[in-house]
Length: 579
Image 1 (cartoon, helix red, strand yellow):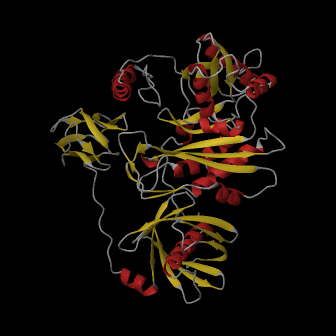
Image 2 (cartoon, one colour):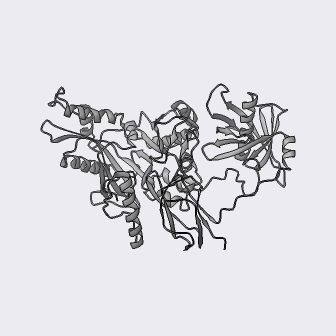
Image 3 (tube, one colour):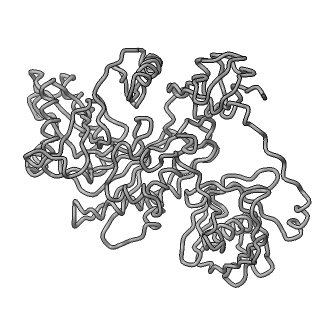
């Protein structure tokens, strides 16, 4: 680990000598580039722990001795990729009251022992499972590090406690460093100190409800979360009102949405900085039950609906991955998250082959068109009609919808008296599905990319991301994936049958850069024989060193990029000899 490190940079896990040699080189380079300090240290690696941290705000008296320490409820930050957090929540499902109290006590003791003042974060690793306890019933935990600052995820603490941590940090600084303040008085709010003292069961500032934060990154989850760069062509943040309406009122929980961001449509995402676009936070509470576990379920539902309504176009991003993790009930990740089984190995465990593209057009085992596919065809047709005519249509509107682009799967869609009938044209049997059009939420005067359609009682959220010169619309459906769609008349579809699909480009003899960045090292030369898995080069992107390896055995025919040059995503770096 980098001595001056943070954010997962300059860190490698080493299981053997080869890992250690390579990790030392890469970590040193990342640490030097990111922090100007190439020093490293080595520590024991604890497998499959939970990453739990405690926010503190500490203040000193007039003699400079730390006497007041606020300890806030923990944050669970275990779901990570490349040692960088993706999802954070407060409180944690894992901790018992006894463990929370003991960890809070240790955090306070540490702050006082080193004379720390201001806001800070003390991080621990906790062994998972209630069986991992000592004689006092406290779960086993290990000190990891202290960050002498606020963390990216501090909003979840603010949501469950109602305390503005930035205000408290500034308040402590002002009280201690400016003479016009009375240093004899209590620096931190006495009400919070008293409340923490009275919370004898847990030893932290009292809290209520549940908060969940998703870090929305400009990165491609289909390429192992490699960064994505470019301008944000469309950008819309979800609102509390829209998400609350979508989640529904159960008569018990209040829901809120918070987005911390510094971007807007037109902002350029550069390869030189961290790829975070925003912090998306959802919160739910039951006013009658401060620590109601049902609030967590509501918070997760709110996050899924917020992701459906989060418009990000122009760069690849991880919102679809987060939505899949939280909202795909058929996947093991969603089930594990619901029960709080979230060790730091979570992503590797539930996505061992990486995150795979969701096949939106997947048919079921009997090859019968599903209602979801029919709904995609109907929703796509309605977006086209609303853009062109301002209304959904009538019995005269019969459209051919190609899901998947210019040479996609064709469906015939017909509207009549509040119903839509969808027929799969190319199937051996003409499967037909009829859907009732219960509601259409679309404002033709709005610049919003979002339309909502209620079909057969189910809401579908569609995002319109643009239309190419050949009429291909790019749509996002319920934050599950992007889909190219073409709308034609029957006659246009008949004529299109004479157009041939262009052949795919053969890239089997090429090494393409999986990300935009800079080529910082070459490990082979032209004419050199390489083995499968051999290191070929290193590409730096957003201060992370990424080693590219050969996917095949062969001879390097040409090196197409020189060291120090910028590379684009999918740009050719090497060509293999065609032997």
